[in-house]
Amino acid sequence: MSSDYALTTPGVIIYADVMPRWTPGARERLRTAALELFAERGFSATTVPDIVDRAGLTRRTFFRHFSDKREVFFGDDEVPAIATRLLAEAPADLPPMVIVQEGLRTLGERRFDPRRAEIRAARRVIDAEPALLERDLRKQADLRRAVRDGFVLRGADPVTAETIAAVTAEVFQTALLTWLDDTRDAPLAEHVDAAVDRMRTVLGVSRPRSASSTPRTDRPASAP
Image (cartoon, rainbow, N blue to C red; front, side, top):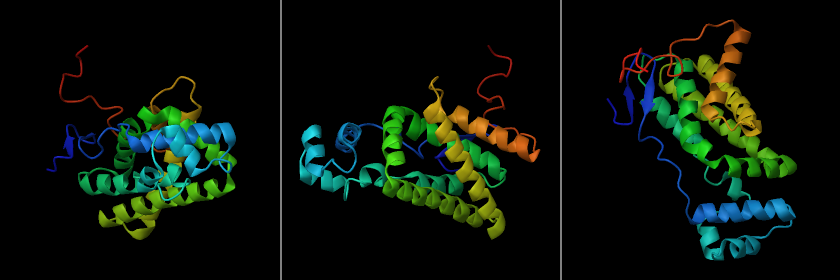
């Protein structure tokens, strides 16, 4: 079994080393400075020199991390690559939607929840800029393509794989939008579960056993 996950009970994946937790650095200082300036001055009025001055870094450092200021939003989109790896690592006998749901839950915990304020600020800027919205749609298409290709490699026929990919993309976008609007600041995993439950209700499909509903085997189910 790969060291990247452990299967503790049927239908439950615990991902370990697939996604190291996010930590800040020069790249994040530049992104934080850029988002502050975009909020204050607008995207179009903010220049790269403005960003590096605010971050206390150099233009050379900026261009080591980003090709232009749009890449502040899209330059490190790891989600499609992470999806590809999670699909490749998941046990062969798990139902597709269990893999999707557990993968999105893990993605939320490791990559989105620690950056909620930053992602909210970025979303406001993206929503106000048509060119950024178009780029964001391409990013969503990249995720859909990665999921489709991953399920084809797992043996799904192309039409089934495309269907799973479309559902995955919609679940993720729905969960992401409700997570960003959530004044309770509940984790993204909770919104993923709610989006999947709504989908199952609409389709009249019962919920399988999963990490959100199945007791772990590291303690008795009756333990306090």
